[in-house]
Length: 114
Length: 113
Image (cartoon, rainbow over all chains, first blue to last red; front, side, top):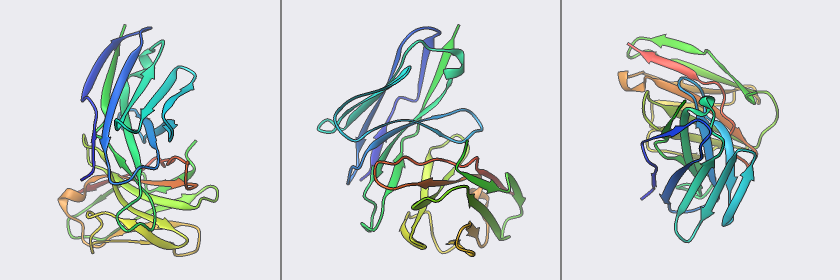
């Protein structure tokens, strides 16, 4: 079956670094995506990995190990506005093989404290 | 900025009524997806659309749901007979294909009473 696991909640301090882990088991794999979602808003795209290794994008970095079915999102120099849910999503081959679907985890709610 | 415009932003309907949610692309994309998110729960895949046809659909996307592209550009998601459990945010999200992320619209909040 399809399964994506993330911690439910995390708390960190302003200015610190936090790592949000994601493990996945899917029938196919065509990339892993991270999204940020503030309460009541749509998810916004943060980062993407298709090959193993680290992708850096400003204060955000994402790592992927396909053999381990594991990814993490690293947030540096945390700011209060980073308080949000962070969603891990795997792009799968889909059931019929005619297209792709993105399977989302339940998200990790990050609270940044002063 | 979102790459699609979704209307209405909020829809309240009575159980058993039909609703039509609209998605207007701002620019051309290869793939279009509909997702829903029940309050406090995860984002769930409903259906994907490629080349004017449904390419994938989930178990959630049963006979009560349909998608159309009535004028070749805009998309509609129709729920024929709404149930209380259809209350959710519905997102339209285009993608340009392989290696391309989803870009979510602002969503339509559907409330079924």
